[in-house]
Image 1 (tube, one colour):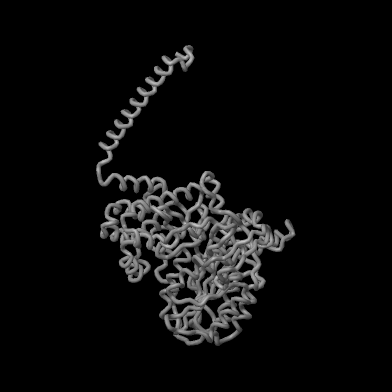
Image 2 (image 1 turned 180 degrees about the vertical axis):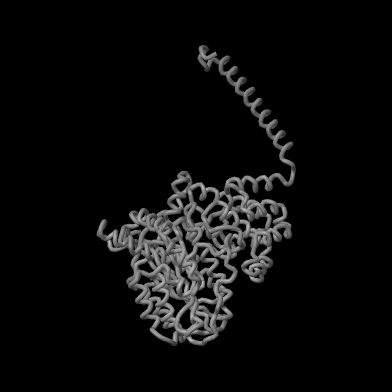
Length: 241
Length: 315
């Protein structure tokens, strides 16, 4: 299962539309969830429509929350998406086996066993969640809450029985302002990571769409992240050996 | 996805089950849980609680936990009475289940009204409920004040099983303040000690609520720790006798809820008296009782024999 979780607080203003990018993600089997994060008293009504549309195009869900609710929301959206993904797969099976359209179409007494299977698969299927963080100027005061939410998510994922990994990206990147930076390659443990979001750019653009396209590409090619990260050749060399 | 928060059933609405055709008249909204709303309903002149969910799979997970629990306590009055769907006037279908209506108030309200004297007993009853659920293979998960109903004479009922999780899985639903992970005190894997940690925080919330909330609001995430919570365990007179117990629960030292309940019970009646002499005296008392019983039995047999009621062959 693949998920992309976008955390932002504004509209994109550079490059490909994030709604189109989300539709690309969905075509690649990646579910896109979006959280719009606000400070108390702040309104982002202009961005709300875009946020909702990105999630719809990406087959996921969206929520507008304040920084205090962020951890809980990240955790909840991830879990719900896992269940929904499994449910869609199970529904396909149901059509073949029972001729029922969905779990809901089964009589209540036959749901118990099916839901037990859904719960079991939801716990044990491998899961990869890429978090894409908007670090443009207005997001800066909220980044501490974002870091906390990421750590909290890892804690929840560690209690799953299936293999669970996250990767973290932020945008805009420091070079040309229309891509993203990989802060954390696929991992299941961030205990040793002091700060997750580093090397933040001072540029003011919000290239949400292009950044999403890069993350989709990262999903496709497992080692693409190392190139974005611009790290030593040694790492790639190790993989070749 | 349908969200049940959009649903409002007005008093007087009659809900008819799609599959079993049971009719339930809505009296009023009782409360709102994570997976849906709970209404007070009337059916065949009796009152029940009806939980309506927005999502059939979420609600069914809850029902699975309730069924597992019911299978364990066959003698008890059934808690789960019917499971069905209904079609709302707006065309959407909602899954629901009917459960026994538990008259009672939320834990903190009960203690406020009836007094802290009830706390040790209510705590013991709650631990018993948790132990029972654990023995059925589930962890409650989302233990908090609102999810504990207390009825007459401190009888306890757990409500809202939305967080109930099979042992070994990731806890499905929890509340930050009560969550072991939030306090950097362990994983979110469903195990007995997870609920016991929440139980300990619940005790702190009841008597040191202000300080607890202050801790959660002022500490940096990386500085939250069980040690901070342990500092709150012996400040309040109602908690003081249980300080050692709470410390063990916060550190995850109890092997099971049953063991934790037994430890709680010792505090309840021990009053700090050393257990060794008590045990001897109680054993002596039991031995004395046994001797008396045997004597009475012998006398009875003797009497029956002399009266000729028993066949002589028996002697």
